[in-house]
Length: 290
Length: 85
Image (cartoon, rainbow over all chains, first blue to last red; front, side):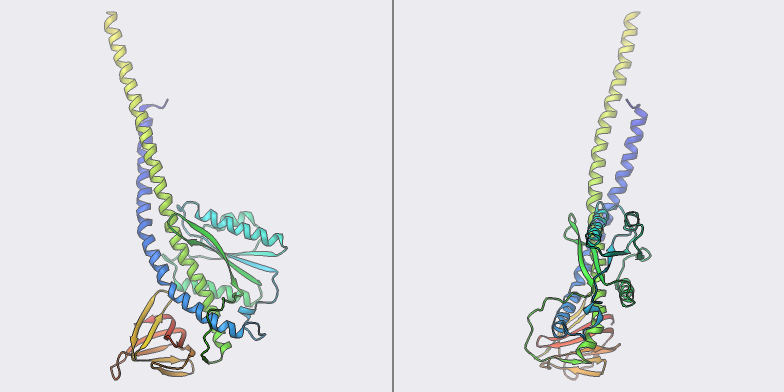
């Protein structure tokens, strides 16, 4: 049985923990709204770019002259997994879910006899993946130096990836990132990044489109942008997912702390009452003995 | 009939409005787009985009960096990486 003083100390410490989790929850809720609207604002660009890509790709697809980024190296031996994690913790199971998805993909590729390397964005995925695959080559990009990673960071990541691809460091790249569904649900999602998968051909209009310069030149300029947009989308989804997961996790933590405080308070009151009763009994017994 | 003009950056949809004419700094020379322009697509070089709201009005200049311009039956869409109003 803990002493009264000990109980009081524990209640106080749980109370201060609750204060922290509550503050973090409120911060996450405010940031979530911002991250969500940023993700929504970025959608038109991605959609338009995909449309343009689809119409161009249908014209160039299948030809030998298609750009390297679309055609691929012709091999599929060396795979690069681009894993997008968050930089900060306190967001529930989000990061471990992403890492789990990355491990599943890596295992499937290794089972098929492929080589797997990693490219890690964000701090939280590094340690668990390095522990699991100490021999795999891992590069990464640090997004923790900026407050909210924007298009410039996405562009830097995409250009580094494209440079690695063009120097023949890998054949296929997959992007593993959280997909924000709601504050409660964020699923890790895997998509092929390089070679750029030919988008499903939308309704091709019959109108003759003139291109300036040629179709291939445009496509060549467009593909890196498309990769950048994919990475940018992943960063925005990550931001929203992090805040959503954080909000949910902190809400749970606050509620658990509340329950714990209640339990401890009841225990505290009981022991206090027990101590008083014992004292009374002692006094009365002493008085009667006289 | 006005021209439907959209200017989109990765961060947001900057403009979506009906205008008279837009002058775009294409990679192979500037070109003006009016309503009913033939379908056309071009790489855009860094430079000012001139938006004429009505015929003869003073143009509004928007500096754009890196992107594409697409003209279709729906109008003109400019995708730019950076925009300075």
